[in-house]
Amino acid sequence: MNEDVELIIEETKDRMQKATDHLEHELARLRAGRATPVLLDGITVDYYGVNSPLAQVSNINTPDPKTILIQPWEKTMLGTIEKAIMAANIGLTPMNNGEVIRINIPPLTEERRHQLVKQVRNEGETAKISIRNSRKWANDELKQLLKNGLPEDLEKNAVENVQQMTAEFTAKVDKIITLKEKDVMTV
Image (cartoon, rainbow, N blue to C red):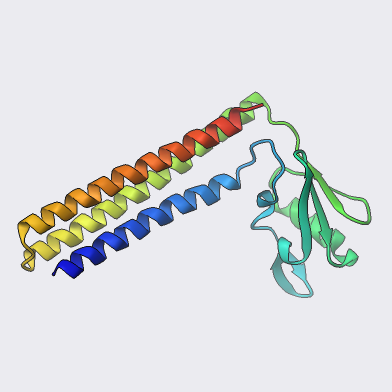
């Protein structure tokens, strides 16, 4: 029975880790006034009839903090890439010079910064809800094991362990949110 408890705790830890990983991924996609290739994640282009991620048909880099430079492997892809960026509706305007596509990242307004902070907090709250749901799942599984003959002291220790993990991951989420808010509000 002890193996079952360990499996539940491991599964819970994995679920909580996935929630924080997802939060970090989502926050990386938020524009904080600096150019980063991550802003273009999720954009796909039609490459000879196949929807391909932008990074697989071009080289994407940031020559300076305010510019993203996209150099397609084939020059014939310039127009297609430009259309895909416009269609993605990410609030950035590509400029095609016949060789490469440049995207200038405009500075964020104070109002936009506050909107982004709200979005960061919402993402953080979603991660915390996911962590709490993982805790609820684990506690339900442990109660089921208790009904099936698990000693009470083992169940109680496992519940405390899960609660401690919940507190640790919630603190980790708070730290991630605070850093991102600071990043967004820095001019």
